[in-house]
Amino acid sequence: MKKRLACLLALVWTLLSTAHATCDDPKPLRLSVIPKKSQETVAREYRPLLSALEKSLGRRVELVHSNSYTTSIEGLVERSIDIAELGPAAYAIAKKRDPAITPFATLSQAPGHFSDAPNSYRALLITRAGQGLDKLENLRGKTLNLIDPASTSGALIPRQAIATLTGSSLEGYFQRISYAGSHDRAIQSVQRGIVDAAFVSSRRVDEAIRTGTLNPDELKIVWRSEPIAYDPFVYRSNLCNPLVERIRRTFFNDTPALQAMFKDLKAHGFTAVTDDNYRDVRALHDSIQ
Image (cartoon, rainbow, N blue to C red; front, side, top):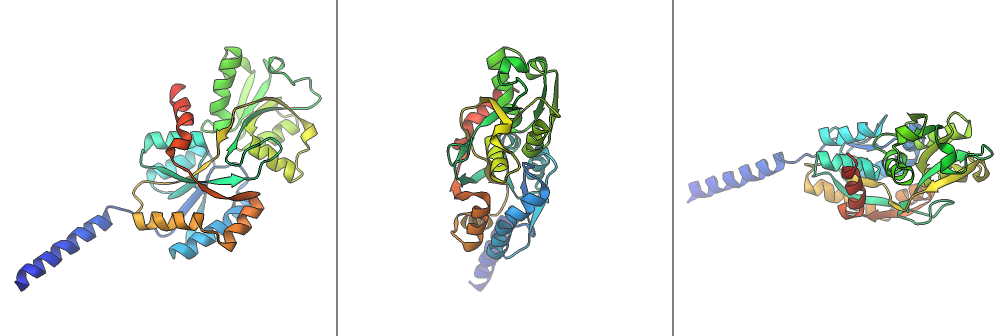
């Protein structure tokens, strides 16, 4: 009897050990944010979230700086990044490569000058005021900034919009197209006259107006998209379920540390999301590939 009990206990231990070995419990935990802003700004704004995660998870949490949207996507797929804030199109790309990547949260933000809903934003085609470029037909043969090939408002939506509105591709309609790498740099390029126009996120234009780096009278809004679901936070495949649950609780707990972050970001808090929130963007991405 004792021998059978010992064998049974050994079997249970083996099964539990095997189950634990099939999931990842990374230490440190690595979080990445697509380059919408400068690295310094992201590090300052997201420090409260990293501190809250460190306290909740009992481990160090590293902010991994991504030089491009692709860097964040590759990190998730290759499991060198554990959590990431992606744009909707970047999520669509990551999800296609690894269906187990899961969206779980997004920031609910205060409406701004050009963003009229808390959980969505718009793609804007902007030009500098006073240049006679306030209509799309006046931009034929001009120079354009996009953001990144995996950007929603700065690449994916513009390709669909220009094809629909003009019957031409972006490359066929504009004389030269360049990638700014971030929305802030694209806005500055228009301000300084480096390019004639740019497709950018309304949230980043609102932020530039709020911080005083942009006067709304400096710009002309040539075109704006329909609302786009705001950027998802996602976790990669193969994280252990207890870790995922603690990550979720940290995001949705009403802690003083996160309140300070929300105040800095002009956000109300985190809102839960699922893949359903991004199905339209995923379908659009698949249709133009």
